Image (cartoon, rainbow, N blue to C red; front, side):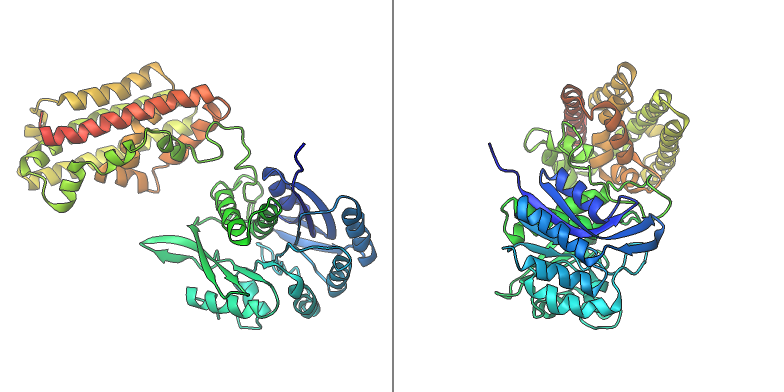
Length: 479
């Protein structure tokens, strides 16, 4: 029988359930790690803020620690909210009596809602007693500035983060993971979160990059990250691997934050990787693309027709033919959106699909103006014979919509929406066009626990992608 990894979390209780001990246990459970706990403080809080803190007596903190470590033991330890100097001293003193090498320290100072969680006179105890026995310290930028005694805003570039991590390393921790969520970076035109991992022994610096998600619902991210790191360490991963895997876990939890919880800063989604889905916790859209035969998606988005448009080598006749067919295609695409509205189970979803029709109408008007620049009139377009490729794809979409359900129709249209040139990009990036979210919402209710249903929609998506490739080829073949 295999031994389950164990992590002890020493932290405060969040009555709202999004941070503290509650977030730690949820995170560890979702990682298949056994979590034990020592409570240091009780907080009265929700998503709007903390309105009261009750510290647990130091003797009782010690009792809890000894009870867990003398019997259950642990493979890694993490600390969270340690609100007073005596509590910190008691924890350090007790831990010295039990062998431990994997201590992750989250310097909890201020909650997401802005409430102060570490009193000023505890800071020096934290620095002098706890940091020297720490394996991984996980401050965010504001916390790093406090620990270094710097004024707010001192750390404002990635180079500043590198320098701050080195200074924090000199204070005792073997590794510093300086979190970059407060300081997103622009990388190749996209916002990214860069977490800086510094090895105090070797001086090595690793930048761990993840996508940035602009959301207010980030309650519990620090607790969740430190718990995930401890869990990964308990499973045997080295520090770099543990931190990399944990930051990915947290970013996925943020991207699927539980916005419906509370009126303020909602919690991250600790359940994102444990839903019983046939696509293993990924987003449904990513799972659809990932399920395609190897190379098919690249064949679609890097088709010679696309490259020809990009580098100017596409023959003029091919492009003009494509413009005419694309207008005809948009007419059918509008019909598909209308069918999606008809298939909608409620007025909100019907309205979302109806908005797509309006966007398509606007796009068709722009399309006509663009065609005029190429000497193509509306009459020229309407008298053009519809290509067999156009017929094949649009009738396939309409047939799936007529014979299947809302999800079948949305998936059949998805290849165009997600990867189709200027029109696909326009619709996909328009903030009013919530199409990916609509797919995710439909997937939860239709395929979240059904591998066979997931296989069905993957087949629809694959066929739609192949028909989109044929549509590109139509432009080259002009028939």
